[in-house]
Length: 504
Ligand SMILES: Cc1ncc(COP(=O)(O)O)c(C=O)c1O
Image (cartoon, rainbow, N blue to C red; front, top):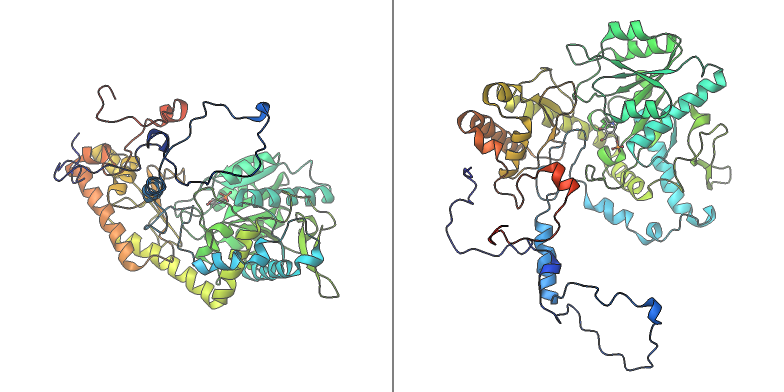
């Protein structure tokens, strides 16, 4: 297949060595060193033979310049939010102010030991207490534990709290079902199943909201809770959620909010006011820590008065003398992990919250919604929109037309986007949208970046008709093209092979 428009096929100009292509082990010369350590002239204390390393241990032998160039070349192969638009839906990757990293890196925070006495880390504890109060205000749920280390762990905490409350009500044996919409993130049904419940899937109605008739039919005395994502993973507002909350409470069940998409509504709508009993937040999506790469997260769980006694430990509390204490609520589900949560992520969230204030948060959610709708408008008519109504933080297109008419998959569209200099969006999620392309521009992308992304996606849609092979073979410009993903995982080849060598 030729590489259309990739630049690779031009063959013009001298060939430059791709410094990042070979592993450090396959470079350099015996005897080269990155750092020269002067010979030791003092008394020699040789290691006992038994502690010597293998003689044949092969280490890269590179000069310092080679080493720096090698790692610089490798770093340039990375694509991150600091390189360009990163439109993953459901795994929000937005620009986060660097000052939040600086604040989190202050020695008073980084030097604190997790086992330090509470008296010695009052500054950190008070900062976290203020964050706790801020999150309670933003969610309208007055009680908060900052302990869970990810969204999924926050979900587990919330569902275990519901379990403990039902146990105290003497209804745990009868309430064995949790209802979850079919558009939910996979962690929702997985959490409910892990906590020992049977999961009943709720179908999505034509307008992208929960199907009211099914909820009414399913709600009975066997239901422990309902997990609803607000806004949902289609980027849509759940129409009639307040009435659904009333129905759920009348049936004696609890309403759980997956608050991972809070960035679309913060400063405007509060889970507590909508009737939710418990919610988790993904601070690493909404509050200033990059998400998506598997880095550290934080999923605080926030709840009503009724569920407060079951919160996971520790919970921050101000005592009468003004000191801040870490306490275990009286009927706590226990600890989700050792120590106090991912404090670095919590501190970034605090800095973000304080820098913005309520007006700033409102501006963030407004801009996130505006950007998603701008993109939706620009791409209208170029990709199918199965749920065609104004969106909140993200928009879910479908590549069904391209699949049907040109035998091009969403996977191919995503790969071709790499040639245009963008990170691909989330694909094939939510599961209810065939050939799903889920895009979240976030509030930090300027209009020109959204227009450039739309232009690239429109060019790709046109190319799907005129030259579908250009998509099927993409990416053409990335250092690595398409891998056989199964073979790459099962039989990885980790040494550099000269592509010009015969038989390579
Ligand atoms: C809607 C939704 N719920 C839950 C999660 C799970 O969060 P985490 O990956 O932190 O476990 C995510 C992940 O981004 C999500 O998008």
